[in-house]
Amino acid sequence: RELLVSQIIEADATAELVARITHAPNGYSIHLDKAAPDDNTFTHNGRVILALDAAIAQELANRTLDVQESDGSTALELR
Image 1 (cartoon, rainbow, N blue to C red):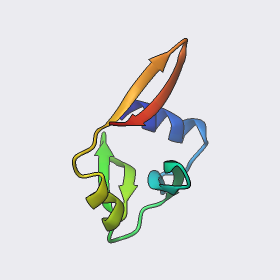
Image 2: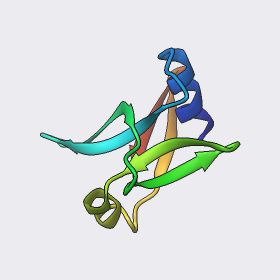
Image 3: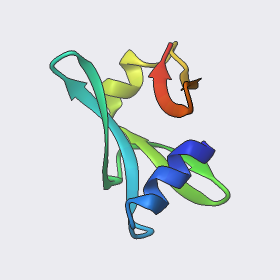
Image 4: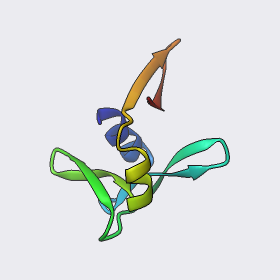
């Protein structure tokens, strides 16, 4: 969660923007977007930081968003 928050802040995002997981050609992608009223959302310190539409939420129900650190870099990974 801290990684998502820091990435949103680094992108100079407003309080309205959140990270969103969507389909991509090679799996999934994370980008900044506004949360929709019918999204499944996840909060950190009272702020929504992640939004998933119903289809993505169902697909990822048994998956975990994890942080991988390697050679001084940090990346998000779905497991």
